[in-house]
Amino acid sequence: MSVFRRISEALLVGVVLAAAPAMGETAAPGRVVSLNVCTDQLAMLVAGEGQLVSISRLTRDPAYSAMADEALAYPVNQGRAEEIYLLAPDLVLSGSFSSLATTEMLRRLGIAVEVFPPANSFADVAGQIRRMGGILGREAAAESIALRFEQDLNALRADRASGPRAAFYGAGGWTSGSRTLDGEALAAAGFSNVAEEAGLSDGGMLPLELLALLEPDLVITGGDDGPGFSRRQEIMSHPILARIRAAGRDAGLPGSDRVCGTPHILRAVRRLAELRRGLEAR
Image 1 (cartoon, rainbow, N blue to C red):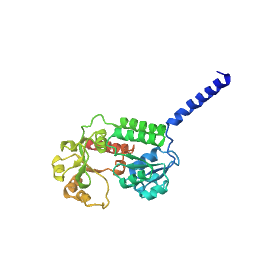
Image 2: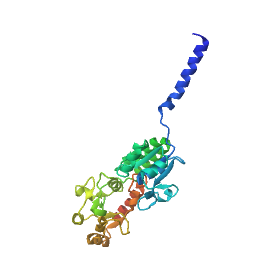
Image 3: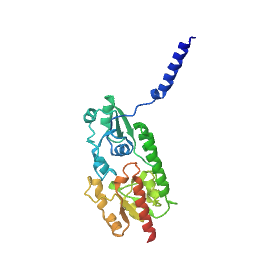
Image 4: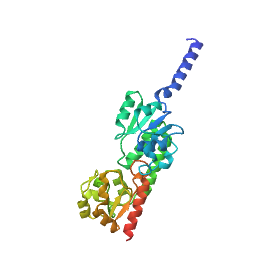
């Protein structure tokens, strides 16, 4: 074999080896559009500068979003397929219970779509941050955020989850059991969850009569004094809840920190811990 041929083969092998990692990698999407208030916030936390080009309008509403102020920096969309298509995204982000018709249409048009389910635990929160990092090619940034979340959570956790008895209570009589993000926040703050006594580990409808019979030390509502948007919210003005309020056994906790699985859930844990300490000091 000639010297020239050996040199040529060595150069060829070097080029192939150098190119191999790049050939196996997927390029990070340059234009990302999000259609869901939760994927909006995850992407806002993780995305690189200029990568996220549009978010849903709800993320500017402080009733639903913990990042309403930050959302003002992004153009908003109405979640319509034709609108999203014209934005020429490399990737669309959505939630599993929203914009289903839009995401299916976009997939038929050849646009990549990533769907995120709701977070039901602290582990889900960290996992979804890391998943978003992988999707956006921002693994290091996402890992830093997820680790900080896990460290802050460990520092906040109460030694026990058998303190005062509390129940979340919302529109339609919905309560959150231990196998929900709200339930994990309640336990982390040191409360015992009344939903468990009612057999609602996954959450569900808790009749007002049963709520009254269970006599929780604290009933936690959404903290929204507005008129509401549906008849399901009429239950929140029922006389039973009015008596609980009059007895000082209720507290409002903004839903914006709890709607989505983001590190903002820790603000809810901190507030719940303050409420527990207040009850124990009585």
